[in-house]
Amino acid sequence: MNTIGEKFSFTSFGESHGRAIGGVLDGVPAGLKIDMEMIRQALDRRAGRIAEGMRREAGVSPRALREADEVEWLSGVMDGVTLGTPIAFIIRNKDARSEDYDWLKYTYRIGHADRVYQEKYGIRDHRGGGRASARETASRVVAGAIAQQMLQEQNIRIHARLVQVGEERNPEKFDSYITGIQREGDSVGGIVECTITGMPIGIGEPIFDKLQSHLAFAMMSINACKGFEYGSGFQGIGMKGSEMYFSDNQQLISGGIAGGISDGTPIVFRCVFKPTASSQKTFEAIRQEAKGEKKNGRHDACVAVRAVAVVEAMTALVLTDFGMIFEQKCHE
Image (cartoon, rainbow, N blue to C red):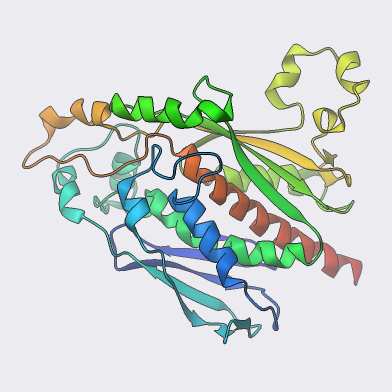
């Protein structure tokens, strides 16, 4: 599926090395003045041109830094104001180097979707991974930035940050840690933590439509995301029940969600991102089997750096959709 959301839906389209990527956002009310600068900053964060407390080039794919990521609005927006109709937009791919991936016509990369796409569909776009490329997430960030603007009107704020890189937990050392990994020709994973404030009580449904279920669904759709936890999460395994439930830390107990429903306190969750599958070292492992000229392509040493903006975007899409469903039920 390429669509997420019910009352507030987003559809993503396009391939990494196609003419453009883009999306269609449906459910945005008329009269919303879009903050174009907010969208620009979100795209810059996703590209690695802005990274909190880090040099912009630390561990980031050269292509991501050089792509202009200029949004072209095709429908639903006039003079920067929404019309209430579906919003369609594209971002043209201007720095694709498809020839770097020609050798992948004959082999599969370790840790990528190459083989399963070929087996499932009988055809695949070998140029940088096609739809499986993180390039696709730029469209999500545009849609998520619009959703965040809608949430901000309700005083709901979303803030994600990188809290761990490999074994390093000191943000002041992330820059040098990732740079060192990159110099080795290798890659490393990381953890992104997201905090949601201003959430009212009552968002989410019991059993199969729990708020954390939808957040996990959205986060696990992000490239390289391997795990999701909220509240005490996995760290709660080492605690006794009496220690946890008599703690003064409300986020440790519930993470802002109880019974699948927001409880009015800040929601805190974390996502684990694996080391980037493509690196100089991993490519060396499959070069012998490939035919023709072999090039590395351009990849991140730590994809978690750029995933911060994507986590925020997907969170905003989920919350906006839930909010619209909640509002409808309140008026039934």
